[in-house]
Length: 503
Image (cartoon, rainbow, N blue to C red; front, top):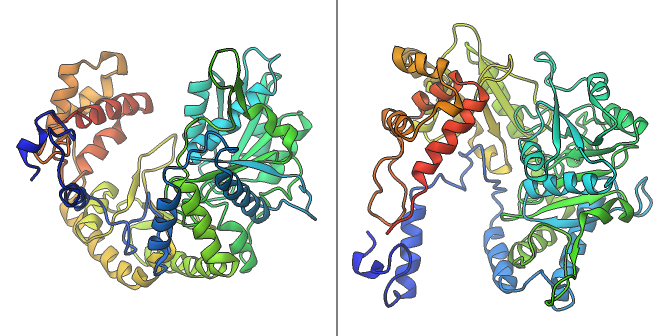
């Protein structure tokens, strides 16, 4: 419990300050309610290699550069050197560098995959100032960050539906979507939801034929796929070895196992990267020049990533890819062995994604049952003919847990069957079926949230968050019944109820 006297001024700002050990104890107590970031039981959001000492190394490196500012590389050349080294490593892993088909690869370090994708779209847009209404073409399985980029940058988003049978975009359909105003075509290696690699070579070819840039979103798997290929896995061509690929993004805080948040955006050459920069001198202060969205950037994440890559090395990443590949195979076998479940796709990266067969368990109830057994998975809602599914992001830390997952999955499926599917109250189902985003009122949102167990009073512990329901099946069922536009509005409102200041 945070001492109320220490919060006289409200929130985290106390009147006289608190002892360092008190502040740290509060952080640790608040952290105790989070999902476990280590131990191999969390299948989303974090990436754990289970390498002894790596956390301490990354934390020490972060501490060394936490107060260094990436705004001016002439003042802090250490950051420039580390960024260049990270870009060189990513470029080499992804088929670029001296002696390759893309010897002049350049890049920038960003805060994460979303920033990398926003910058890829910004660069493509700004390369064509003569196009007044630019557009980008993406498959429906592309990461939502492309939609965010289009929204922020006022670029039209042309979404190409993906066949339910293949989960991959048809290159001919992608080609047909290209217009004279198209500045970028994008594809995934792999797609996040299902973990399948798009036909990059074919898509890059149609983009090149149209004179359009092609970006490969390899944020999720770009660091692992090359190592899986070296292990003999049939990874299709997706990197700079493919003609027509003009840029690639890869997150180092995923399978390079660096702490959050470090991503790299690569371009085939400096001329392609040039429009990425923002420069402004028409004011009396310093001339601003930024390769990325942020101006001030802490050197901590960059230094932590540099130390992580230096420590693990190529051999370390090959070993981690081997362990992860075997864990994926074991988890996929566990899913195949359960009546009522099926894989959405045969795994070809580091994702196991499964759904229920006809007559199978309610997936949202199953997710809750797995959570009750210590497995934290990611439910995915149904979309455009694709059924709801369960996503497992597999890391090296999962490998020692694979033998435990199968029996727990069997037990969880049995419990979900016994509980039966979630049934929305008739009036709630009717409301969701008829409701439009514009019709949502504050009173209606509060009533819906209360009925779902969301947005309650703050816990009084300084977290500022109300209690969340232990089981989310009802919430997920409601969202699954809503069309995408209504899902978006509902989640914005629900999260808004949770994010309130502590006074």
